[in-house]
Length: 360
Ligand code: FAD
Image 1 (cartoon, rainbow, N blue to C red):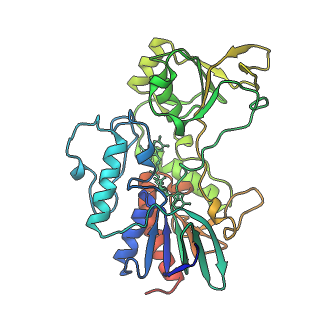
Image 2 (cartoon, rainbow, N blue to C red):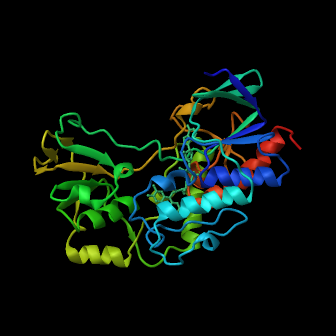
Image 3 (cartoon, protein in one colour):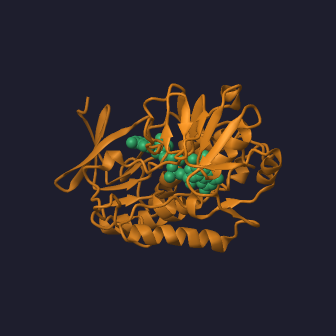
């Protein structure tokens, strides 16, 4: 254990949209896979986090899955219906993509810890010790669900689940469910769960619905705002959190069914449910936290310089370069935490890292 050494120039950690895009661009720049760079991924199969998402998330209910560079998603869809499950279609796309471009991924290989030894990063995994001159980290957020703390959380005798745990609505049948969160996942799960059981919806702030379709300009502004934050070393906000919620036909239907009544956040959790500041209580069997994810970066703790506020000062064309450690790029972090953002960032990161390391 930990005695095998594998030396390379660049290690790409994570093979979701961000990792595959980065790998594609490294190859395009002339680097050879498994000699000049390697790709490591902890998941058992291709698909990044998409392989773990619930089955009712279909190509019509996701926002939009942007193509990876060089190959269209559309051409891999045998069934052009939009009701195709995202957790099948995206893994199939990634699998075909890897094969087409010869992007072999070592899996399941979980990176436990990265540390610096002289001029090289040591990348610890259960069986192999890899070493590289630079890192493109593309580990996403799925492994780091966020649940805010409320007093009494340990007392609750029901179940506390996170978006990540959701599989089917059947599980919730005949249980009273408190759904926490004002983002897209919260709304979608509220829609589905409220069709089979009783629900109470709570959010910190009143949800912001936007009229009409989400245009490119609004998307551009949202990304620019997150980019501005990370360039100042502030912790990023999720791109989705600044775009608002579409006032879709599904949402209008929920309004009509009367399930879109929003309550403010409760102030404590009790043994049997939740309690608000004014003393009102609500019984619950399940509290479902749709409170988002944070970047999965724990394995980089020893090498990632952090600001006092916990943020990371970012630099480079698309803010993928760690300003105080330019041999590390974060793709899929902050402004690039979307399929389109990850795509573009992969290109910028590959170019800049190859230049920093003088590889061409
Ligand atoms: P991931 O797909 O999470 O890939 C990260 C990879 O890193 C995984 O394969 C994982 O196994 C691996 N990994 C993690 N930690 C380690 C480790 N320590 N060692 C080795 N490997 C590791 N975005 C859109 O653009 N459109 C959408 O419609 C959309 N819908 C979404 C719906 C939901 C419910 C959620 C939660 C997110 C959605 N997003 C959407 C955001 C979307 O997930 C990202 O845009 C994008 O897919 C993330 O790609 P990624 O490569 O950064 O991360």
